[in-house]
Image (cartoon, rainbow, N blue to C red; front, side, top):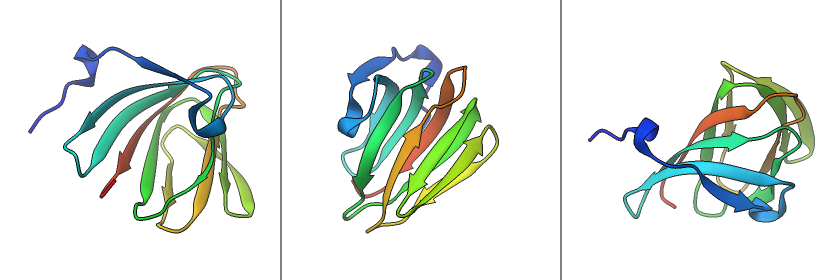
Length: 109
């Protein structure tokens, strides 16, 4: 199966999971797994949330920001990956000056 994210429109998600600003995504789901390209403009974030029954992986494609993961905070940038296992909490924040673009996978949603 092939999905062409270049042919999809960005969907705005204001205050996603309680975050700041607007999170944009292009998503494919088969009803079990979710794959998406995401974009956070400067100052935007995905709110801090816990993964119950799922995990999530972020592959950072462009930009830089920071991850809140359980009780830790660390910077993340293009070329790096973040993994949030089931039962853990995280947030993605764009504290840079350019868009933070990433690819995310959530299996067994």
